[in-house]
Image 1 (cartoon, one colour):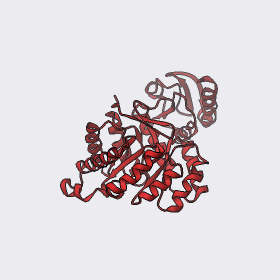
Image 2 (tube, rainbow, N blue to C red):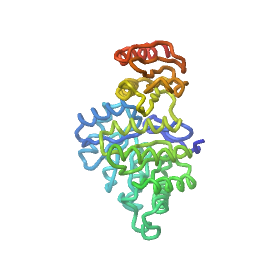
Image 3 (cartoon, rainbow, N blue to C red):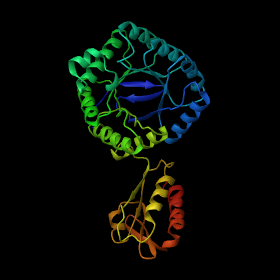
Length: 353
């Protein structure tokens, strides 16, 4: 069961307070490239992203926030490092939330400057600690550890509270999965602010997805996390798909088409692997609760996928179509892909309404 946290609104999208976990990502474009940024945000929204973050590294980026906001539907978070003035400029230009890094935003004076602007515009802030930018005093006391991450984050939260800001989200990310999990676990025990979870600098696609799935999944299964981001050195659309798969694997998203398929073995006498991949790609846009099975052989196929709404299993020169484990049609293997897709389209578009 998820821990009950406070609730904040990010541009109308509710986070925490028992709401379902929201998927975030971040653009890779230069924010001042308005056309490119808007185009990428559109692709992220189509993939299922619900909150998007953009880098604000100079005055041109801060000014572009307004133009980007006018052309998108997703809540926009301005990612700020080093400069309180850029944070204020992004907020003035319509950012729905700002993320500040405790390790480089400055001291109380700088935080007050940002806090006053946050409070005046009634938006939330994320205090985003990570192992690459922990303040020197916490590093000296705790080393590069979960305790240092948590103490850094909570100190800065306390400063924001001192200046009247209480719509706060917190993150404590590391590239190490065990360190990330420990940090969020400690943090969850000490605060009821909503938590944005993720493994930072997770790496390239394959390794990054594995690290993120292990780290984020471990936290979500223990009820920790209100928003998630999978951080990949890749197209951010892949981050969104990966995040949604993690939510599904953790049982936190139901309205999707699950594709189950076997790893195949020497009994497989047809192209089940390629069909499984094509089916998985085809069903992505459908927001319905359904299970589709693509099984390599008829020995175990219908039985192993007995709860599938629709499935196919191959044999020597033929394939069986089945529903809920019961075969209902025998087709030639060479026609399997075409005929199965016909059945799948009928099921998704007509039979599953």
